Length: 346
Ligand code: N2P
Image 1 (cartoon, rainbow, N blue to C red):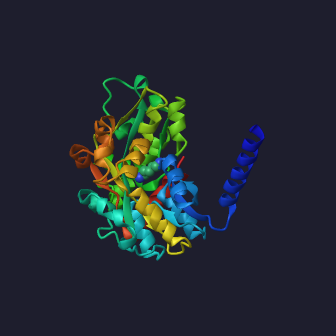
Image 2 (cartoon, protein in one colour):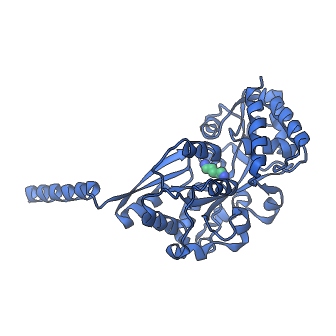
Image 3 (cartoon, protein in one colour):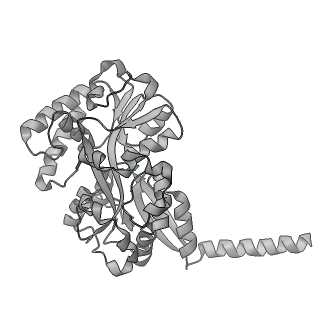
């Protein structure tokens, strides 16, 4: 009996392995932000579609865009923020979406579509909405803690703080602190923001957009600029971590799913888009990444714990304190120049 079982298992394993390597198993190449998808859902999709999803990760819109422009090929789906969708569309990188292949597009919450900047979902479907704030160790800061971007100017925390290695976020925080729009094109305002950021830089361990999360958990860093959901994820590993949105205001980004024109697996790419827009799937994704999926079919599945977290659910008072990062066309170059100057400053 045991031998028969062993034989049967061997046959079943062989069949499983062959299915895994057979020509009929399609691959989908996804280029996404790190820590931005519930891996169990990826496995579920692979099983439902007898395919393999190959994931690659980036830590900022600019890193992703530079890699694609440098010729990185083979990706099917990417997850840029709204302003970057505009830039990529202008560069002719994006497929115009066929909505008939994404029936779950009906689940998108129209209350948030404006944040995606692609109002007709011509090139993109909204994925998750984030805001940017301060993650900190509650026992290391003065209590009561008033969240302000100006904390990065506090030399008591020199070497123990990081800001995002992301020009729109870092310059944006300095602009908000000075009372300006984070989309300003005014050279005087931008120069003031640069000078403020250069001052703050003296106290920063580094500009960092991914490893700062581990650094906060391990208490190497005390105070970081980071994305809402990412910082909520770190709280699961260190209960001293808290998240706050600075009083001066902050950025809001709607990240979206786009299909590259060069995609070689368009049907599978549409299937994955549609899968991620399913209500139950989007809810399970939210419970894992701690960002808001603007998906009306997802809301009934959300836990009370998640619904209680205003920065994740983007309550109206949070939104009122946020500004959406816009594509500035030729003005984008002004931000790159300022950023280069900040990076070069000592
Ligand atoms: C994922 C960060 C995505 C939020 N780690 C940026 N808008």
